[in-house]
Length: 255
Length: 209
Image 1 (cartoon, rainbow over the protein chains, first blue to last red):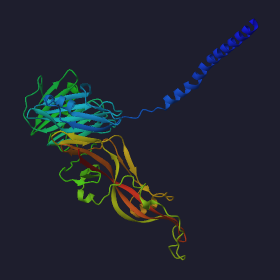
Image 2 (image 1 turned 135 degrees about the vertical axis):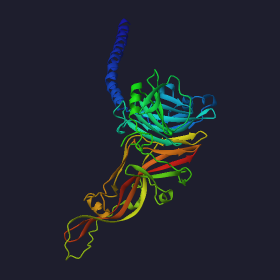
Image 3 (image 1 turned 90 degrees about the horizontal axis):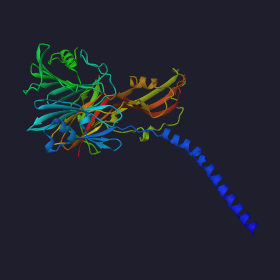
Image 4 (image 1 turned 90 degrees about the vertical axis):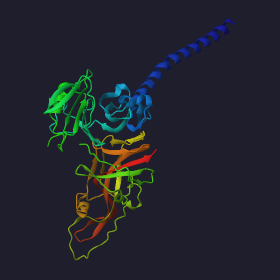
């Protein structure tokens, strides 16, 4: 009887020991087998670049038509190649400027692999701001040059836009954006804290804000020359001084 | 340098895709030159049609004798062909802009990256492009390149979608490419079609939403 009991106990212990050994051996095998595969999978995953497929410009809600910044934020929608849809947020705004019934808002498009800037020109009509013109500028090829222009960077791209008898040149190095605009002369109340200076025998007005954004304008015959962008006071004055007459066919460059 | 052009939104030309061509430009010396839409009707927009056309298959060599044996010829590859109507080839489609406001919006349209199209032939050219250049009268081995800094203005009416197709106007030549022996025998001859991108061209499209 005891002999049978010991024999059974021996078999049970032997089986239990075998299971334990099997378990302890199996675990490291799994590690050895699967770890390199996981690594390979990670190496093979390539992130597909996200591009901008579509820009939708729509009516901003009435309560947001009193501010050009709000019209752009609430009236613009980007559709990306990965299916995502987004609208400009305040953090995406590079700068915004207003002179009377005219305004410009520049936005850096988020989420995409390339650097791309949208520049919106707006007009105040019956107390409501509306988008009149939009320039969509990719900024990863910086090989343009405007002769004679004093800019704070050496490599940049230029986009030229004409609408409603207005012309503007958007110059960017991918980070900073400068606009030089030539509009038909119009009257407006000067912005607050504007200093009067002399630019090439023209009475000019300059305004520098604490966020590194500057505005400068002057009248040249029947034209308003309007410069705005991420510029210091000295940079915007130097740029304005390098401009030719508004009537020059090479404006804003020189022959 | 940004290229700027102005589309006429009133004249439109219906396309089978449901969109309308509102303006057409050829790029001459880096500047956009408007092309009348009626002239463009002669062109056919064909995308990748080298892959689908039936007339692109080369025929086997026929060792055809074209001259009496008494003549002597300069040995080498030759091409003898005729020119067909040019076609528009779309290289890249610009970003689409949707105007859901109540007023016209002008957009300076552009696209991502750098895109190009080179001359193509429907069969391998053992003697290179020289014989084709000699027949067409200019260097036939050309590449047309669009880069992101070249953009075009388009005016989009309310409730319309607008975009630009950036491409090239291509010359088409159809003919025989062959090897001429010193005894004036035409050997290894193939019937080929050649596509040569000549000028950059832009089609501005609009479509009702």
